[in-house]
Length: 315
Image (cartoon, rainbow, N blue to C red; front, side):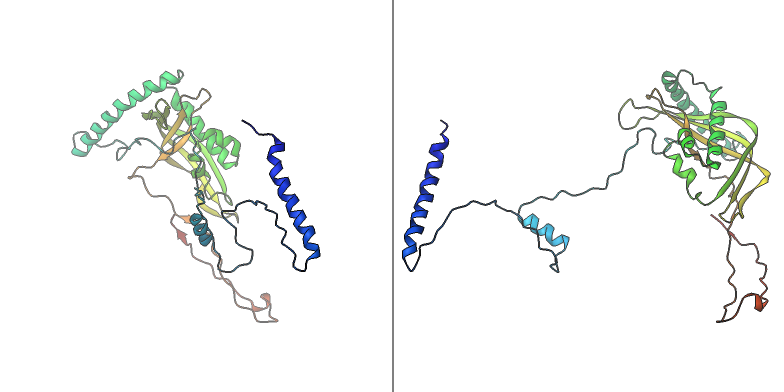
């Protein structure tokens, strides 16, 4: 049964009146009686250390808080998860050595033929799954569309058009294409296609949960291109704008199939082990001049700068 506020406050009123009476009586006495009022304060379980105290580290504070019964949550450095694309290439295509030019009568050629048959059987099942979600996908028309995406992505890279490049490549491929290109000038042109592009591999993996499908298609492109890279001083580092080269590439394109607004984008590149080594990069080197004394000028010394030899570094 709830008590009234009057009955609850009555003991406190009597106690205060008694203390006041004792205080009045004590005025006529040489030794006054103490005047005590009971006040309840907030109970503190952990008092933070004062400012400027030496030897107080964060470890000591954590140990004292643990001894006082206070639990401090541990901070974790978490990475964001992006489900718009996968983190890699599932079951990557292994290009046959020599681009399938070995004879099937030899032992190595027979192994290549067996591996191609095994991969083609799995690719046909993956193509069927892709067609269930993308009705416009065909192995005959897709290579031309994928080659157009490849050309547009590289043109956007040379023009540093970030918005367009994000729409043409996945979040995994973007940092790989733009890495170490901040202070460089790129000149790239697609001259011609030596062979028609074709689909050589297809996979339809799942990620995070069952039914979350991604389509990955590997494309073989054999073309003629020109590439020239200049450093921040305008000096040529790699390639040439006048001499085209024949390039054989195996590109991986990916699409989030269950997303109705998903599109095919560049996801990665497969470099076979038998591929030739890349050309070395020519870097600019500073040649130190003579040490000048106080009052001397460089023009008065008639110093001749020797012509340096071509110094090349490999990647």
